Image (cartoon, rainbow, N blue to C red):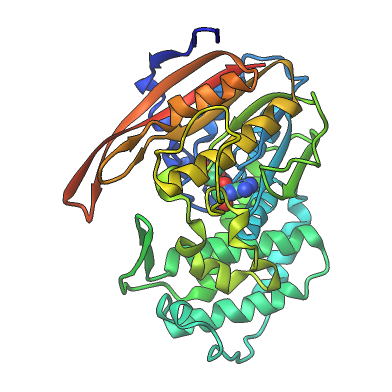
Length: 379
Ligand SMILES: C[S@@+](CC[C@H](N)C(=O)[O-])C[C@H]1O[C@@H](n2cnc3c(N)ncnc32)[C@H](O)[C@@H]1O
């Protein structure tokens, strides 16, 4: 007879804000790019600050790098994996240990560059719609100049600054999963860009990142071949949420403008987007679920198995997830993943409910309340 499940629920609404990106808006470096789907530096600090420093922290869905950046601030070793090259670039650019003196010279170098006309005709319509044409020409001009820089760190810093400044002058904004446009007055881009770089320079002077080991990979969390067995002490990670798996569309403008060839990653590389014929090998029965929930849970099962392999005996995993809501039903993602994790060998599983959100369609039709939770589990 199978053992009785011992999964415990706890209400931890005090952690509600920490699982959002909001606290990062005031944090130097973390605020170089606003990532609505990210969590906060304070969450990482809360979860690891009392442990001994000689540990390795893994985030296999690292997004824009909140986890590795916080680890470098606090002095912990870290590993990050991200499938999307645009987010991967931002994580890399935010976590370099820059030489502020060198960066200062590069800012001077770029501010002295004379504008040369550029052609923006070939850009996709959505990009042209997102900017005032003068600003867009400036952005494309600087992008070309930056590509010529042969110092890797300087190039990443200048490009990060360009992305940062462009995100402040764009007409585009994200309304849930939809991109909308609103024209607004914007400052002349060139000066604004240089101001942004100088502000970022102050940030790297103020925040002294520690030279602890950090490895970032462009890769897939379902196949962590780059990570050895039993090598990780703590995992803190937040996969895409069931109702919000599609980030490629929402960040279409940024990717089209700032990435070149490397932007083509097959969609099936993203969690939940590869639909299979059957899902019978899973340790729980999900056959009556909507197809998209089945694909999602299957992929996270693969991730949980990988986590069990790479985490050390005595290690801990914190998985941040949310329930999925459909018109006719709710999918309790936290509970289902906890059961899968238990079947794969994880123990002492707790579900900390950190938020309860009212979910609507088109802002009016109420779908219900979705739980956002941290699943804590030990190996
Ligand atoms: C909720 S976000 C994580 C945000 C992160 N905690 C932060 O603060 O920036 C989920 C991330 O998982 C990435 N992702 C989706 N499928 C993936 C996969 N198969 N392997 C690795 N990353 C993936 C998405 O591109 C997205 O950046």
